[in-house]
Length: 330
Image: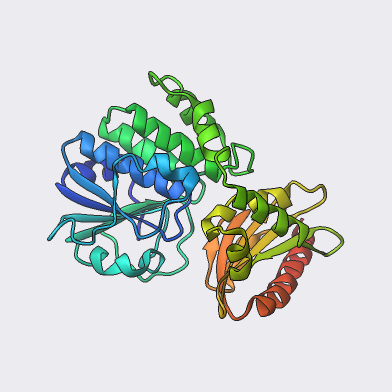
């Protein structure tokens, strides 16, 4: 797909009446915040728009739904446009793919490199240099002439905040801060309140889960790699859901001398998802791509077919190899 510019996308969005927005499975802050923000923008122009989700929204993100999310596959009998948000492949939306296929046209707005070319789009943009998909939503909304209301501002800020690690990750740019500063001009906007909602409403079980994951971490390659895991039995023991583990990887990355952090998440006995982060020089996107995953140079993910023990043995070796390769490329 050839990228459209913001103005072209804005013009196309104005031409549709019924629009469904599709966040990826296991919604994170950028995914849900960007989807909800786009929905608010479209409704502001009189469109019929919904965010179609399957997942239970994580506790710390529930305020972002703000009346935009439906889980009803039949919300429209037929509709004009399906928009993939924060993902570039239909494979990332699970069973909702059957609803996605019912749209007359399809679009994508994403900031990840597309790892699977399994979806044809009428238009869209994939801009990997963007810190968060929310930046693209904000710029497109501005081109549309949208009134950036308080709900839109809150969704955009939360999305950028979470995908940049509270504006600490290396993907944070001058544009990220410029957009954030413009949001502070919206009447009633309170960035501190949003940050509190995002990070200071965790359950007791989530804190216990974090403690176990941190205490069980393993160190590789002279302390440059930290790896830990979350099993289904650990979730049951702490009475938590997998989405409550979001953010734990930042604890691993805060350790002095660590370059790569990895958390392995057991989905079932033969499926493991790996969340990967790098601090300064390693290209973990290359590791993810070798397993059919994707993402950014410093933040990526993959799915491993096998047991969590097999995943730990194989992925730790792949990460060590990436440290060596990235060191050689310095």
